[in-house]
Length: 108
Image (tube, rainbow, N blue to C red; front, side, top):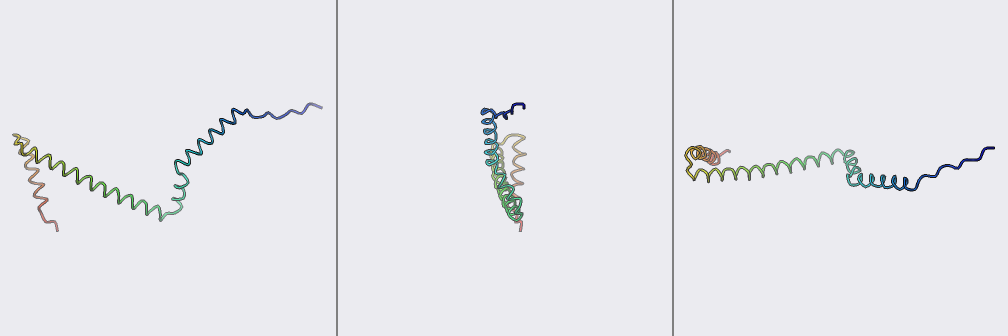
């Protein structure tokens, strides 16, 4: 009768490496919040509500940002128009007059 062969025991270093690899993946999955995302996909009304709120917030942010940007540009154009630069000054003055005229119009 041939001798019974003992199964090879896994190398402890390889087991440790596999454990560290699996633990790292588990931590990355928890950080990415995959579970929360999948729960969100199963509640469509909550998903719609969150998308609506984020869209409104983006819209308000864009409106406020554009307002500050446009006000800054108009202010710079007024300052440049006051310098009486030969060619550019007339062009800037026309733009400032048009913008001020549009702001004074009653749109209602």
